[in-house]
Length: 259
Image (cartoon, rainbow, N blue to C red):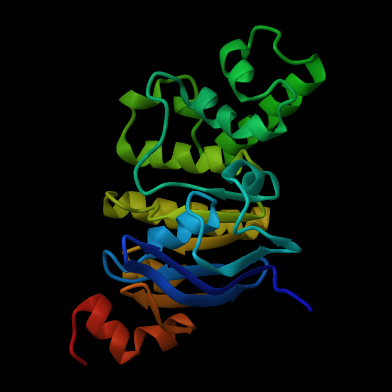
């Protein structure tokens, strides 16, 4: 049987008798931006938590390339090439930008995550390994234009900058598939435009496939190759941005129009 680059089949999960997801299915092609939309409580983040290994689905299958991943732990999923950002920023406030992004290198460190955290810069790596990790992190800092904050504690930085640093940390894992959970949440118009620019660069320059959750409908329609709309944990429609945007159920459930 031939599988797609990324594939979800009949995924379902319940919490305390409440069905959070019911028979969710879709495929992703390598290199595309695929968005999942829906109102609050539709099950979007639950879907991401299943994909990234935080939740174990009650039924269904999740495949990444040749791997069935629905029973894998989060660290194993990261190691095979899937990284994610979170809706709420998950950075270490009292570490600087460089150090926070470096944490994304933990799966590539021979020393391991915690030893690398506490001994970074204190001969914790071989010279060759240290150079390789620094070069990778510096390339991400350059890509996201974070040079002016590379040595600053992230807790004192603007919200939009922190979101970029979290994105950088996910990129440090060197993923083939990047899950972005509302990357523009809480941003102003200028910051949203910048984030759109970075996401397109990640797709075009790095060749990374992107699975996106986002409430900003304009952003979704501008950058997505295909869109899946869900509501109450169930699929509503799947298609191109134009097709989904014209769907009456989407207008009613997501935008609030009766169509």
